[in-house]
Length: 549
Ligand code: GLC
Image (cartoon, rainbow, N blue to C red; front, side, top):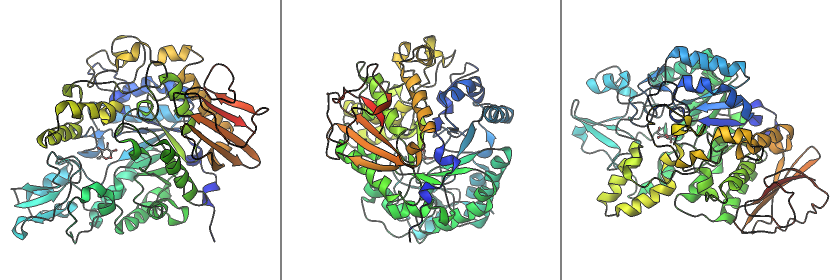
């Protein structure tokens, strides 16, 4: 018999998560890099959004080869971001305002500058040797493994010090940790407890689907990287590790947990998140976000993907919903329209979607304003190491620079990392210095200060949409039902919960659209809509409306 744990009420299901990239949020000391004191300055802003949880991308000590996703001390704060005192003050300030904090836990790999790795590479019999994956060179070359970030995409790096190769699925400075080693696992749990004891309210497990490895190191088929996750994600041992983590850490505190990646199937995802598994609370699946890697996407397929993931978790398990994050282009550029004419209304429409689906919504900083891709034109505008490596790789493989730049302008993850646009002052009020990455030049018209004063702004709409989600539990727990599935312009669905039924209509196109829902909305109350005049039967470009039926 199927249990219905999806409808069990939990704070982390009702929460709206706001993801904040600390490097780009607010700089308090003029060095051009966002910092913890900067976030403290903006706590009232965060509170005003109505969100419940703030997820911070990594803030730990790091040589910053991958903007903090290469941790050299899991219990230290990156000096550019501040000190542990600043961290404590930030956490306190958040808790005083009823906000919860989620930290990013990056434990598929560490930095090569972590003490563990320094020890590990120093000799074959060092007690930290087995904290990482080593392949002795006398056995010949290790079997090919693909690296996502390496300039040559080779995941084994030869280290002459001990005449051996180490594994790195990500960058060469991000050696993979060996989760088979119980001592390593204990270190990680102790580290998580350290943060939980401080009062942190949750953890996002970075790239964790790759943590368990098949250490018999079988040969993998050539070209397997096209289906990278299928071959290297979710190896069976992962569930043992997560159960252990649950027992030692997650079950001991009132914390939420979310995995980046949900494996390769619904079954994989259920195995991570179903309540009776005692592993994690939720995961985010990549199938939808992967649809628009290059320009354009199939809208009907987009609806199908969200619908099938919803139905697979209707009775059991829980997922998250997101349209953007620090690894992706800006939501409005990618999924709708960022032309001056439509950017604002299109961003409101996408926020309506994000905040009206089942699953915990993750809103990415700046998307509440409708921030879009900055339209960088030169390779020197980009700062992300892995993206620059990829540029070199593509050049070496015969692609023309202008074609690579065109692709990057649409999809490079730096597009989603430009500084938060606070006001019309220099550098959008983000810094008094030179920002580490250029500010989007539209900040003089797209910024918090102006939008706070304008009741019709994207920001005010976002806040109203967050409040609506809080007021209508149907938007959290309600049954989702896709309508007019083949409609090429409109995403239409109902959400239904305890006798209450809501109808969501979203025009994802720049043309007027009609939709065949079979529901008469003539007398229905519009709870929210993104045009200043009332919605009618024909939806205007990017129009969004939620009706109470
Ligand atoms: C995850 C992060 C990404 C990072 C990578 C390596 O995918 O979201 O930003 O580069 O892991 O840690």
